[in-house]
Image (cartoon, helix red, strand yellow):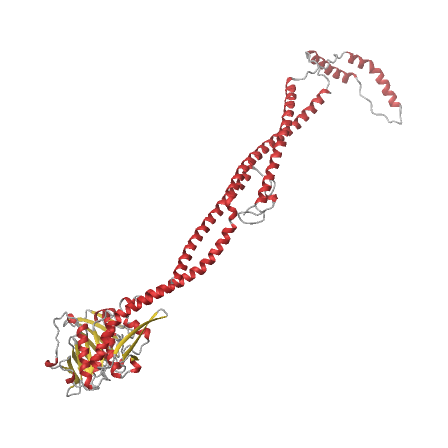
Length: 624
């Protein structure tokens, strides 16, 4: 293992330790945050009963403040119309975090249900009072249509009933249209009277007597419906119905179109409730025009043949050019500008401004929660259901926080417990860093020594080769002393000439004789004997060969031998240093062995098994 690998391995341990410490810090932060949120959620859960009690107290107090006015109003209305019937009580109650409202009549200490326990006249009176109460809780136009609200009231109590309606209309500044078929004398000097009857041709008409009108419009800006104009609408060919401030009774015989002129006309314009049945027979189109304050008029029309079927238009003054025109495609759909200008709309899908002749019972037939919702008993009480709903959402969220939070806290606790060994990790890593630096230095020294040993080995090899060559040189004879070679050159020339002479003198050698025939061999011997004296004479004339010069050991060779001796001593010293380094490496392996044991034979970063061979200098590294 080289020095860089050792440093890299320790650096990876430092990085892993830092990551684990960061993870533990994040776990601790998450644990603290969870403990806070779970603690707060549990604290809020512990206050559940107290909060419910507070809500009930707030609801009861708000209802008591509000129903007190309702109680007084309805009781006064009932006693004025039907003396001795008892006192009206609105009884609010909290059930399942929802406001319930019961309406009863107390008489002689006993409470009875208004709808089921009392007569129709009582129901008529209280229903009318509830309609005014509901309207007072909205931002709608102060306009009320009571269609045959006196149907169950005895004739001798009609005047008292009308008087109460007139008083409530005046006190609440409400324009009230009272439709009835009773004798007009019962209404005189109590409310305005408009007669709806038929002319000589049988057409429906509306008219007034000056002495029967008690209130007139103060100025064009005073808010209110000035008139309702009907053209080919149900039984009306063209009827102009004047309207007045305060309470107005629309009187006339049955089946003369009183309800059509007032109640039906307001429903089709304000709520968009119409079919082709509202168009008069043998006519293609019906129109209803509401004349309002500021000399404005809203015109509604429905056609059998046109598309779109229904169109709303807005006119100003006597102009025939519409300021605004809005075709309507869907049923029960009304343009926004009509809703804003007319100011008549349903609240929570409940129609309380246009009474029904066939079902003159308002709110009493609704459920107890529905009654409380419509009346929104006390303005602040209307916010309490939202507040309680919000609390229930918070309560549900707290339960989820506690459940999930405690599970997460348990998981975090286990994970943090497993990371307790990180407490001393930095000290261990610091020690490893120091030891790795020392080990790296030792490894570097070892590598240096290894290189020196290799060089020494090569030098020793070269030395042995040189020594071998030197020994070979010892066996070489001494080099002859070099002398003047002029004579030798001259001798060479003589030899060359002698060679030429010999070639000329020495006869041509005979062919090799057949070994079986010795006669030719004999002849050759005779010829050699004849020329032998001449050959010897030529050899005698050759110069003598000079002696071999004596060789001396060169100074360069002596220097090489001396260098070999020095390198041999350096080799011995490197061998000693190598032994010391090997001992240091063995000591470091023992330190790594102890570290392996202290770590539980597992990687602290990933928990994988860690063999001791991975920690040795020759072992394979552990990689994540």
